[in-house]
Length: 300
Image 1 (cartoon, rainbow, N blue to C red):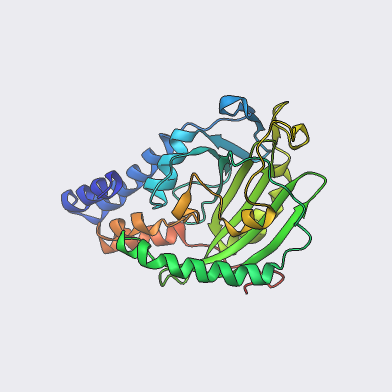
Image 2 (image 1 turned 30 degrees about the vertical axis):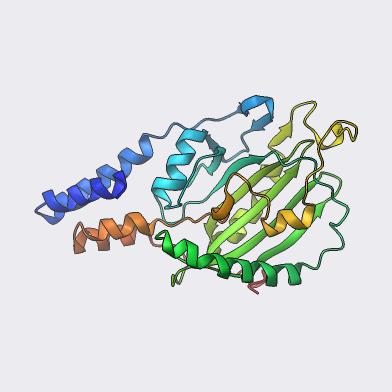
């Protein structure tokens, strides 16, 4: 049982009135949010990789705090290996509508983009679905929900001029009705790729898409690390090309758990034990807005 569950269990045991339940719950949620230290402006990513200029309307959370959010708040098996996360100003990470761009870096070598225009992405999706199903037995043995990839939320697109690849998958965890959106961005560099992975709910797709361009523009590789700095006489070429990036075969830092989950229900299930009135109050506070029309996006 992680620390959050333990604290919530203490709240459930010690509180004797509805008012105490609600006050304790709100205090706990507020204290979690206020304990995080967000940054703005220019952020130097470690090991001289490059610079992140926090986009307008966003704030940055460093790697240690991002690890806490990804693993302990959002219920992923692990959260280490990140370079931080970019969070919208108007979103609380404790809200059901919370979403963010998780930043990682895979030093896999120089990724050739020769195959970008030749990939059959529908066929690739079929392969990804099969692989996800094959991994579910292992996930369930470790106590985690099975994963089903529903389809593309946004088909892969490669910008050859900027050497940026992005796509989005619609994912279902277990039997949950609310599907998860994983919006993936890969910025190709000389020795690897910078990974920006937006973890959100499907009804937030339009909002995420509106922010893709400013987020893409926020990062720049340091001199010597850019895609155009590649030296074929001394640099290693990655084993996978653009198609491999989309398939998720080379996320060495995230490995088996390459698909991230924004699953606040780990906390919400514990909160439910605090008391019926507090639970109903919390649901009203975090109830998502009316789902926007996203018929223009593919669900298959």
